[in-house]
Image 1 (cartoon, rainbow, N blue to C red):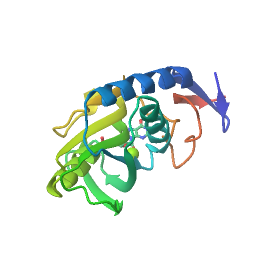
Image 2 (image 1 turned 135 degrees about the vertical axis):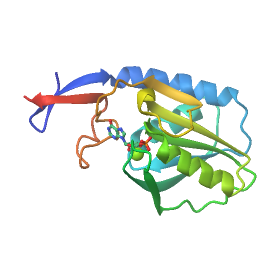
Image 3 (image 1 turned 60 degrees about the vertical axis):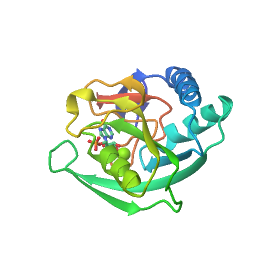
Length: 180
Ligand code: IMP
Ligand code: MG
């Protein structure tokens, strides 16, 4: 088991499994025939997934524009979960197809908030790609169009996901099981 920062980490999704899945997702996205596609990565947790997925999209023949939005969620997983935009995109989304990329779809509050925001700005279509789906935690009315993996109900780290900004650098997704 990998040990990082003195903690043992159980690997849930390996780097090679994620890379294979990204290629499949990119092919699915390429098959959907989006027009004038704008990819928006939801920071910070999606930064590695987005970096890998947009390159897989290139390999699948796509040439999207890529943007970033930074949001923070309070009370994620609760009905009152409030989402705030900390840094917005620069692009105009009116009449464009948008693909939102996030690390985990959990309560769904974050992705629903950003999707509704882009629709309110006149986006023609807003699709969602999430690396992980914690379907048992869903509260908001939203599903991903593209999902990497179903995720068990554990707090996961790695591949961009963190505990207090640690463990983002791990090339795999795992669970901290305790002191090594
Ligand atoms: P939602 O709004 O409840 O869907 O929250 C999703 C966000 O919560 C994700 O984008 C992550 O940033 C964060 N999150 C949820 N579960 C985990 C986890 O297991 N590890 C790390 N971050 C998580
Ligand atoms: Mg996040």
